[in-house]
Length: 251
Ligand code: C5P
Image (cartoon, rainbow, N blue to C red; front, side, top):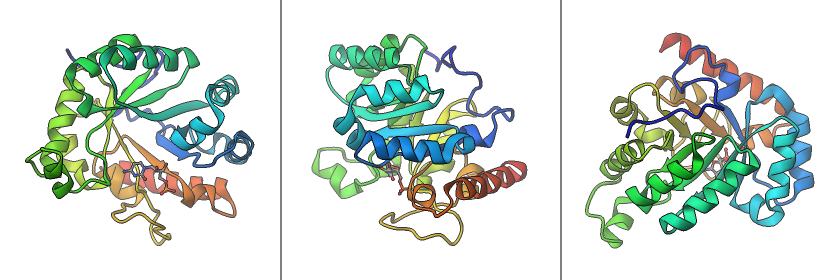
């Protein structure tokens, strides 16, 4: 089955009409709805998408997501689902009913699980598959019985995700070029580990600048602390968008 673009989503990943602002995802890595709302109010339309991950979702639950969606925000719900197809399908349906824009599942859940997720999403969500967690090394893969290198496994998982009907994948900046070559232009590749040129890396080991990520084929970038911890988060977001635009012009 070919990758589908949800009808609720205006543009395919590669569209040059898609503003860079709509490709910038801000990670709301906080524990309370109050902190999250405060960040969203401060940053506002300077970023197009807000990511709610396990920390915030576990603490505050779906009401926070409903509130963000009803205030007009696009929400990336980063729950990295991995369970039997029936359970994942029902969870995807519940996420679709919340009105989220993007949702993550683990590609390693297999074709049946990914297929159930795609069917349950009924074209209402951009389903993104995590290929290989960037915290895993090739040795870690060997330990769980996967004989390949991380890069090869990431490519295999990406192909599986696409054939099962996902709209995109999450990838480290490191594997972007071969992934984009494999997947073609109209598939979302979402990349975290982004640091503007000269910014502090925090605990990220292998970072890329916004410009590098876009020129290497990312459709979206995830940025947390360089925006959320900035003294002027709007300015920080605008600087990142300028870098992204420059890279697109050069791509
Ligand atoms: O603050 P920072 O920009 O490092 O935040 C990056 C966000 O992307 C966090 O929400 C983090 O969990 C997520 N992420 C990541 N690396 C991965 C997968 C997700 O940094 N490999």
